[in-house]
Image (cartoon, rainbow, N blue to C red; front, side, top):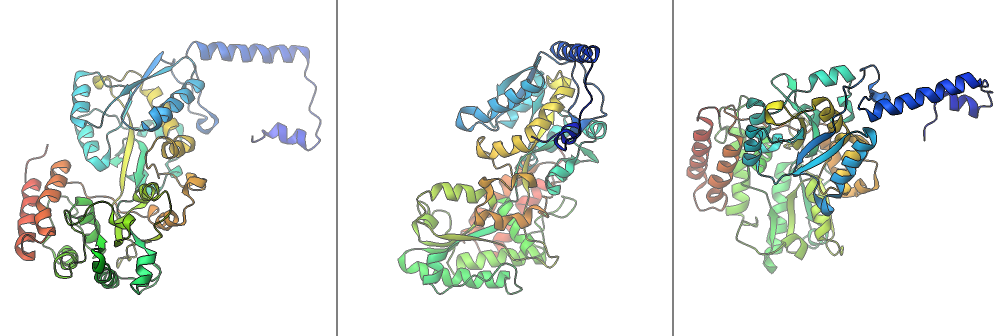
Length: 460
């Protein structure tokens, strides 16, 4: 435990002044009064928030509404509730267990039966709906009052909490999307394929195309493939468009850009690998897990995917390595940040104790809270640099992805806030094109038009 200044002096041999009996009694009385105040609900902030002043009287209960962190029978949740009560003994945290059903969550908010703390994740687009419907409150007043340091998070995850000039929460789970590849090293060696280091200029999308074809032509001898992608998901479309220095939406979120030169080039890259070269394992063309069974050269995968891959490969029979996508012209790797948030509730939705809700989300997102959300809670909460020293994150394949945590690219928000509809349309309308059931040009135009129809609808 870190020593206080007076302990340090004592450790250096400096003699402490003797305390008088009156001083000792005064100290005991002060300590007893402090305990009594805490029991009655008064509390002060920890040293990291010194100067913020005392909190209001603590509530008897604080309601936490969540579907996150439920692994191992909800042990992570229990740990956080116990930590909070240890800090604020008067307050018991009541858990309102939710399922990942955002319409129901909005219904609870409308009925005023949601709790003090909950989550509306940006990656699932409901964050913006929650702001527009005024069911969460900005936390800027708390950040300023407590001199709270958002620098304890990776900058991109802190930025993800901001909208319309305000900050609306603290990062919960998060990763950098499907921003890399896992490749079978034994199959690559057998096929005579060598992956260049991701740091060299020769690592380009053209080089990746070449390697996918070589792996595919070798693997097809035994019914295998060169590559799987997460296409035609909106995340993958975004990442491939960005790999060719474009994006799948205009910066203002009003236009589909699938027919623009850079995104179109990206889609041609994907389409040719799938339909002309026939080296992509398309949906319905395989069964089981081809990478694990040794019949696939490489799969598109992100940092969170790696943990799932390691769980599936618990016997270690699959030998594989990770690499990031080649850099763009601006020096960035193509990615799309994925992440969530913890929010302070509003009275109309059922919240009663915003100050203590703020204290609770600070606890959920501190180093211990974030680390154990990964190791116990079953989530990919890769949002803080200081957790990366833990043994849980020392897999060399995981360390490859850390480069992107400093400069991952955020998503473009549809201007009409129809994010879920946009995403489902990209997925559904892109599938016939991806599977080669339609021609490249006509299929891409049909896909683009379907997405644009969503973006042209009124704001929700």
